[in-house]
Each structure stands twice: as C-alpha cells, then as structure tokens.
Image (tube, rainbow, N blue to C red; front, top):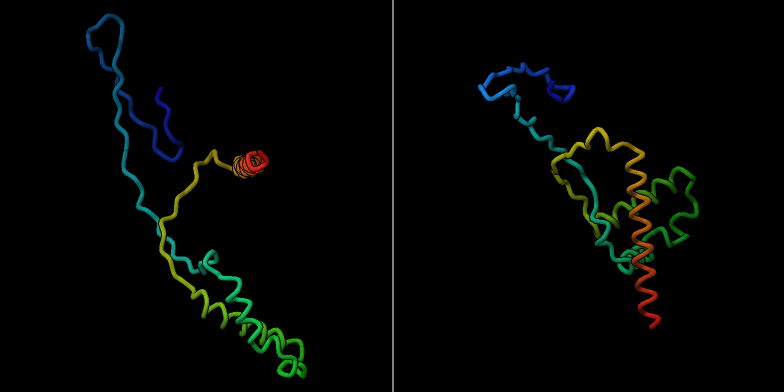
Length: 139
C-alpha cells in the first residue's frame, strides 16, 4: 500500500522479486509536476510610510477644517467632501501602488484553529519580549 494525496490518482504498484530472501521491492511512479504559480495583482498604500505630522498639517489646511466651506452642505455632500479631501491628501502623501505577487496556498491542515493559535502564540511572545525589555531597563 502506498499513501498518496487524495487529489492524485492512485499509483500502480509493481512488486518485484529481487532474489534476496523473502523481501520484495515495491516500485511505482508518481507525478512530480507542480501546478503553475498563481499571481495576484493587488493595490494598496504603504501605510508604514505615513508621516503623522505631514498628514495632520495637510488635514488642518484642507477644507475639512474650514467651517465656512461646509456649513451649508447636507449630509451626502459632507460625506462626499470628506471622502474626496481625504483621498486627495492620501494620494499626495501615499500614492496607491499596484503590486503583483505570487499567491501561496496554505496546507490543508492549517485551518482557522491553527491560525488563531499561532496568532495567540505570537501575541504572547511579543508580551514576553516587552516584559524582558522592561525588566532589563529597571536594572
């Protein structure tokens, strides 16, 4: 018996007598071809590069901080003004980038429970490292 993945066809196994006592050699062929990589195109902003001081200055000089501009607007117009001003500021500070990256599929056993446990473990590790730093600074 040969164990294989469920999405592959069952292999044909040959039992060969090699002439050594009662042992037999098993031989089978397997498909070792890989599926073609899947590439995904996503768009986003590099949020880590956002400078809070620049964003605050741009926001304070915008029409959102001038009541004379928006005092006569209704709710829909205010929402549109908010959206357009923030989009304009972010386009100046953090232009949208398009990135093409290879998609990696998870193993079947890596389910939501594993993902949650890993996230919990990483959080505990961060807390431990912080506590080590704080105890080291206390000395």
